Image (tube, rainbow, N blue to C red; front, side, top):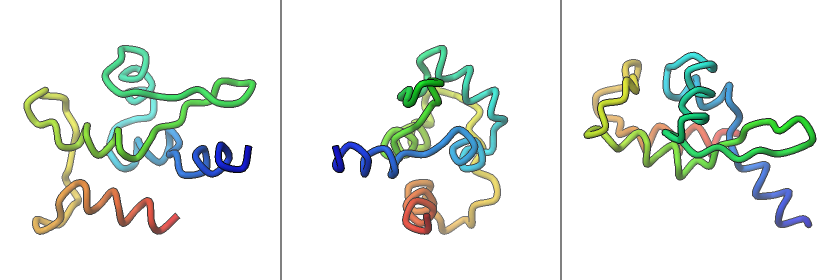
Length: 90
């Protein structure tokens, strides 16, 4: 049970991921519904949570043509570095 709680605590919320990707939270929810990004439902309300690894993969997939904005990142930053810093700061 404690291991399961730790896994959930490392997952990202809709708000966190939408800020990371620079998209509206409704866009992220739509992508989840369409299967573009994998979301996990937790709790009785079915809140969405996202694994940091899934977000990193999505950021690296340039060939899909999704409007994933990386503006605001320094030119020397790689998307996965930015994600790692964000997750570690939590």
